[in-house]
Amino acid sequence: MTNPPNPAPRAAGHLHAPSAWNVPNALTVLRLVLVPLFVWLLLRDGGTEDGNRLLATAAFVVAIVTDRFDGDIARRWNLVTNFGKIADPIADKALTGAAFIGLSILGELPWWVTVVVMVREWGVTALRFWVIRHGVMPASRGGKLKTVLQAIALGLYLLPWQSVAVLHWTAVVVMAAAVIVTIVTGIDYVGRALRLRAAAKRPLP
Image (cartoon, rainbow, N blue to C red; front, side):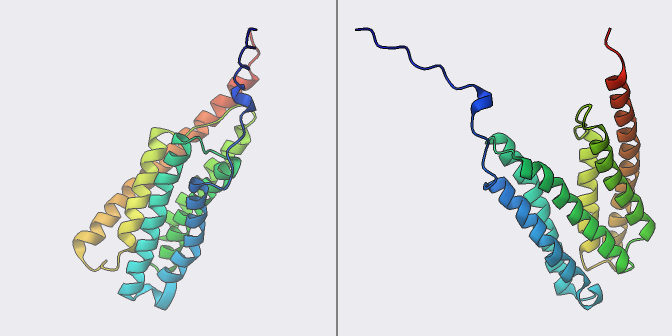
């Protein structure tokens, strides 16, 4: 008697979606939890106590590192979830936004820098939603460079030894580069969004 053929493998679309209870999402939630702790440490005692500033810097660095690893783990192990897609950028912007605003409150970073960065960050997020029906705007190389420069600049500003000239001016130069790249990439995203919508509205031949 001939054995029946093995059942056909299940189509990829029928595979179960990964659970939201996974390591990448746990790292994203940890980053969100670290934001209020980071703000409290930064602003405590007027931001003048070295120990608090070092702890705030450590919290910021840990949060930034989780951002680096959660995406890699999610993609490598096929653990990308809808929760992660939404929570990850929110956690990123909450962390860097808290750092920019906190430093401006302490008078260590001009408010115009914080306003320019925040307008660009949330503006690009709005653009992504504006064109989502027509396509996805992935992060560009310039956008990734912007993220790295902002993280380094903020980390340098958070350190308590700003009276050291070398540290202070290094932080200023890196922040200036971060702001320039932030503005340039923001303009580029506007152009990409407009082109994407124009292409979607163009009639097919």
